[in-house]
Length: 217
Image: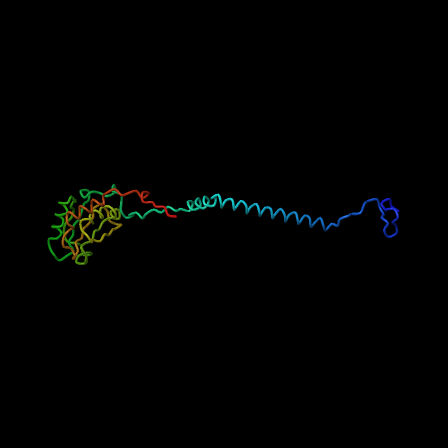
């Protein structure tokens, strides 16, 4: 009989060996671990909820919301007149040579128009009848023709003198001179006052695009 067997017990109650028997099953240890983890999780959730309540009552949520709103504000620039060249790029009339051609059956229009343009400060080149390409084929007030480089410079300036005229460019054209081809719809050049006003607006300095920027949220 082992020394671990209580006195008076034997038989099937006899304890053998030299170690005490386990008094708690292995399964209970696993349950304790699960219970401990569950308690820790519950405490964590309760603590997080408490912090949220504190933020609500102290205004922390408003600050975060305001900061988030500001971060999403977008800056929009108002559309600028991209087709309008800078004032420095627009030449004055006295630096523009104009060829005047008559594409109508009426005689004397080319010289009369050229004389008026000369009074307004333009240089005058050739004066005469239009070529076959345009003769009796221009239905509007006229066509302004020049090299590609004159599209937004010399042709724009000349356009202030004849309202409704069509502007065209020729990539193969050489030189700086531009043509005014008088069409069948032509009556007179734009009045001196209206032409001067349009020319002043064309050569006025343009506002900086950054000055028109707007923020929207």
